[in-house]
Image 1 (cartoon, rainbow, N blue to C red):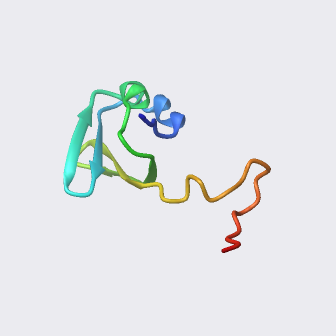
Image 2 (tube, rainbow, N blue to C red; image 1 turned 45 degrees about the vertical axis):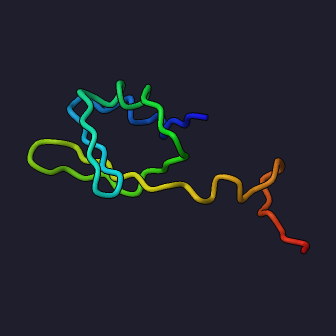
Length: 78
């Protein structure tokens, strides 16, 4: 299964570097980043500029299944 990040990154028109832990992936713009697929659910932790590049730091989204179909938090019964 593949996952995509938040689609607002399509609006970024300059070069973007994505950092996941110690790894870096370069993208020519946010539109290409929005099309990229990741092997696990990721969420944006921070966005900042560094040396004329936009840096987006991603972290694993551990809360992807923390709500049920009506939007309430999951409850453990056992």
